[in-house]
Image 1: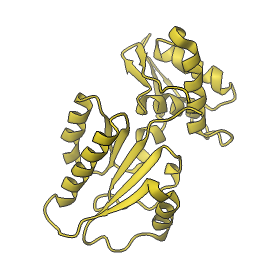
Image 2: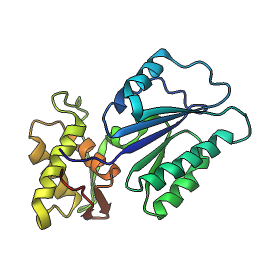
Image 3: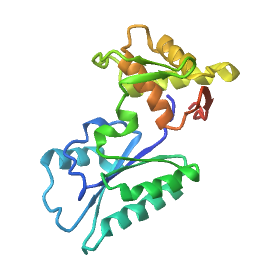
Length: 223
């Protein structure tokens, strides 16, 4: 089993009233929901999902209201989490663009971070509709097939990472060859949507970095 990066999901509940955590059941996800003084009623589905996650989920309640008070709390806890696990991937779920300078600063310090307007738009959970062919400048549309239900994307990512670890210095060096390698390893019957989700998932977890037409790797150690 490959040890995946921990993805920390910090939800600004005053800004985004999340109702479901169904896509965050994987062990690599940890959730913190930040509640303002007026957030006194939560959907039953959300509360039950938080309970099922056990120690991987927690609430942070703001008792005293104030301008941007909840944002400062999120920034504070984000700093603590990043200090404790600098190799993690940090996601702020909020429509508030005021977080973007902080995200930019974290990235400049080589900490993986992103803001998403909803859980559904978190990069590793949302496969793109198209892929860019950087080698010839063409954009090829991805068929909108239904994602495979036989093997989850997270499992496909683990399969791909295990294969890449075995390759040592013979890893794919362009986005196109990496996608072809993913397809070959995950199986020719794997949908294009799933292949693209694996590709984006590798990047969102920090295992793969794409710079133009070049690909570099920062893979986890095999366990």
